[in-house]
Image (tube, rainbow, N blue to C red):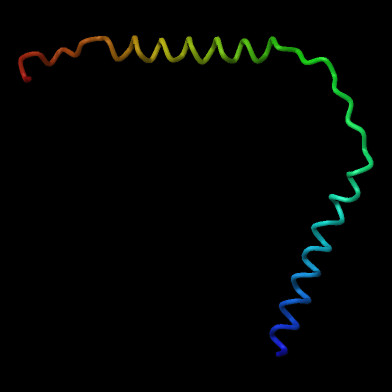
Length: 68
């Protein structure tokens, strides 16, 4: 019986500790600002470029023709 009470008390305390910050943030209003898409586009271009470089490096034939 004592373990059930400790478990229940621990569960209520953990919920109270987790709910505090959530309730504190409920009153804030977040303003949406204009997003600069240049870093996103450059990141995508760099990923494509690195992917093509990796594919190009794998396309170079090895010089082990006599061993295969």
